[in-house]
Structure formats: structure tokens, C-alpha cells
Amino acid sequence: MTDSQASTIEGPAWHRVGPFDDAPDGTLHRVEVEGRAVCVGRVEGAWVAFDDTCTHEECPLSDGELDGRVIVCPCHGSEFDLRTGDVLTPPALDPLPIYDARVVDGALEVRLSPPPAAAEAVHEREDHVPEAVARSATVAGPSLEGLALDDIDLTDLDVWERRVPYDWLTLLRREAPLHWQPERDGRGFWVFTRYDDIVAVSKDFETYSSEVGGTSLQDLTPEEVEARKSMIDTDPPAHTRMRALVNKGFTPRVVNTYEERIRGIARGILAQAFRQDAFDWVEAVASEIPMWVFSEIMGLPVEDRRLIIELGDKILGNTDPEVVGEEYVVERALHDPELRKLPFSSPFSLDLIEYGRRLGEARRREPRDDITTRLVQAEVDGSQLGEHEFGLFFILLTTAGNETTRHTISLGLLDLLEHPDEAARLVADPSLAATAADEILRRAHPVHHFRRTATRDTTVHGRRIRAGDKVTMWYAAGNYDEEKFADPFRLDVGRTPNRHLTFGLGGPHFCLGAHLAKLEVKIWLEEMVPYLERIELAGAPTRLRSNFFNGIKRLPVRVRA
Image: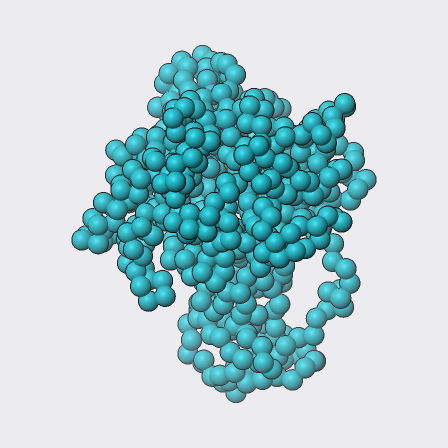
């Protein structure tokens, strides 16, 4: 809104908030107006005013960044259009209140505009799919014929090694949106499979905690949870403070500065791989692109990338005997009281912690412009991270920065090769790479589920969740919810809107590296266009034995002449 426009609008009283007459573009100030925290910002020579609190979480936008007429939240990178308040980039879901601003006699004035009448009506979200549309799918979902709820066992890893049981998840979503899953070696857990329920659980960290009980399905003591606790095992405000240590390194503005370097990495890796007649896509491409990128951001020696990949595989593949060996599968590790205190109950986490410790020492001696230096220099509550805390943070960033994007690129290629019409559509129009990236992220969902723990009794869908119960959110189900995605089982490289749950939409734990991961996938797709018509499957994929990670261990491909 321009100064001249603001002066013609009738409404509540104007409030003088300060001169700020010589402020440059990009300036942000927090002011109080009628008891409300308001942020005023200088954009293109004019002033804008808006709520200072991000609609996603209690986070001051006055500590954020102005990028043209876009405000970027400093806590999670949510982006809002300052002309309309609309959410441009999640995890925020709700629009940002925008207020009137003007300059009178050299002084800045703000008034709190009354909400438009439309805001008082029930607002239909842009990603809502009318029932009639949802039922007009052109690609049928999995067959549910003869399937009963009693047939479902989400803990049966042999099933997950063969396939993702979308038939089970679809039946649960339709007939048992809150389902109790018994465990052979555990207390059992609740299963949420509907999109809206998953978003609600993600948002409500006071009822569904990451800190109480941790985020893995294992039944751990409070002491064991504390010993292995990283940022993902905390709730606000502790989570907000820890995330702030590195968040500024992953904002959209910072991530976009990596674009040309990521493009060069992807182009070089693809060119090298396609010099061969046949190769394993996972080893040659999918694991290489994200690890090269992450090595640069973290400041890791690129010659160490295969070591980091191997350790990450063993830590996160702890339910697959082929990856870790029979001796270290988590079912056995949980009988060792010392291993239970380690991340993922994996002895290999000690190797990665030690690697991170040595790297941290090197950065303390010789700081660089990288995330590792930022971590070792950062303070939480007035103190720097201890060696153990730094090690846990390092494991989280290293594994999350490699494994999830790697599986997305692997599953993405498989999806395109199994849907040649959509691959041809992308080749014909490479500008679809951005929407194709989101669609592949929706369908790949590299993490099947995440756990929370109920902190108090509550009732959902007529069923009683008791304090202390384990609660799980199944992104593998929510990303195919017919009430949110038209024709959800169809690959559509031009799908829009596409507010998938892959990054944990709606809660404080929205993926720190979401913007980076999406950019990597988008660039990979753009650079893959010249090769898509030359590549074909040379065998069946080998899946990871896990109901947590949606992973592919091997994907043999062949290059056509």
C-alpha cells in the first residue's frame, strides 16, 4: 500500500510510531500499536506494516529479512507477501495480518485495519479438494478388495522391504483415521493417516511432544532420551533457540545463492555417470549430488563424502541387516544399555560424533564461512554447545542433509521411468521442474512417519489417547489424502497447489533444509532433461528394510545409445 493510498482509507485511529525518516530499504522495526506487536518495514521507498508474530510460531518477524515485498521468518523461513499477507512458502499455513501505514509531516503512522468481512466467513483452504473432484480420479488407488483392518501390521518390516503398503494406509485413512497399532516388542502406538489430523498434531506440540519420549518408536527411559537428544527431540522454546543457531544458513535467500554451484555439481555428476553403459543410480548420482552440496555448506572435505555416506547409511539403516550386519540391527542393539543411549541406538553414531568433534576443533582454530563454524561459535542460553551437543547436532544435520534428498532423487527417477508420459511432459517443458520437484517430494516422502508422545489425555475421532501414549503421523498416508489432492495416485509434474506433508508442514519441526532440498531436486530435474530419453531401468530396485525411511539401496539403470 502506498502512502497516498493509505491516507484515503477510513477506519480505526492512526498511531504515530516514530520518525524513521532516514531509514534505508530493508529496515525493520518492532512497535506497539494498541497493545499489539507490529512490525514496520521500508520497502521500495515506502513503509509497510504487519503483525510482528509469524503465524506459524511465536517468532518475531522484525528479526527476519525483507526480500522485496516479501518478509522471511527468521525461525523457519516461512515467506509472506506483504501486499496481501498470503503465505508464499510454508511451513506457515495462515496468512499474515497486514496493516495501513503512511507518513505525515515526516512521521510514520500505523493503524490496525479492520478484518475484511470475508475473513469472518469459513475460509476454504486453497488446497481443499471438493469431494466430487477427489472421487473423479483417473488413476485408481490401491485395491482394497478383501483387505481388513486386522490384516494391517505397520511394524512388519518384511512388507516395507518389498513395497510401501499404500493399500493399508488408504484403508486406515478411510475407515480408521485414528488406529491403534500393537507392537511385538513395545507398548504399541496410535496412527494418524489423514492430512488435517497430521497438520493438527504437528502444530500442537503442547499435547503431542517431541521432547517427552523422543521421536523414534523405541520405548526409552527419560535418561536414555536425554542422552541422545538432538534438536528434533525438543519442543519450543528450547527447539526454537537451538534451531536459531543454524536457521539463517538455510533461509530461501541464502539457499538461492548456492544455485549455480549446485547446478555445476549436478551437471558434472550426471555427465560422469552417463559415460557408462549401465550403473547403479543410487551410488553414481542420487547419493553424490546431496553429499557434494552438503560438504560445501558444512565445510566438509569432499574426499570424506563416501565415509559420511557410509556412516549415515549404517546409522539410519539400523533395521536392515544388509546395511548394518545382523549384530547391529536395532532389535538387538536395544538389549545393550549403552547402545540405547546413542542416536538411533547405533554404535556407528560414535564414529560420526568423533568425526564432527575433530571438524569442530579445526573450525575453532581456523573459522570459515560455513555451517560448522557457525555451530561451534554459537551460544544457547549464554553457553556454547558442548562436544556432545555439537556431535548430536552434527549427526542430525549430516544425515538429514544427505539421506532424505538422496532417497528423493532415487525414488523420483524411478517414478519418472515408470510414468513415461509425465517424463516426456517434463522434457517437452523443462519449466515444469519446480512443480515436478514438489510432486516428486510428495510421492517420495523419504520419511514415512514421525513419532510424538501425548502429554495429556485427549479424544480424537471418538478414541481416547492417554498421556504417555506414543502417537505417529504417517506422511506416506497424508500425502495421498483424497480430500487434499485431486487424483492423488497420479504422478502430475504440473500439480498445483501441492502443499504436501513431506517437510512436516504446520509444526515447529518443519524441515530445516526444506528450501535446500527442493532446490536440489529442482536443479537435478532441470539438468536431467537431456538424459531422460536415454535412460531405462535395468532391473528391480532394492528397497531399504525400514518403516521409517522410504529408501532405495540400489537402482540399476541402463543408458540407451
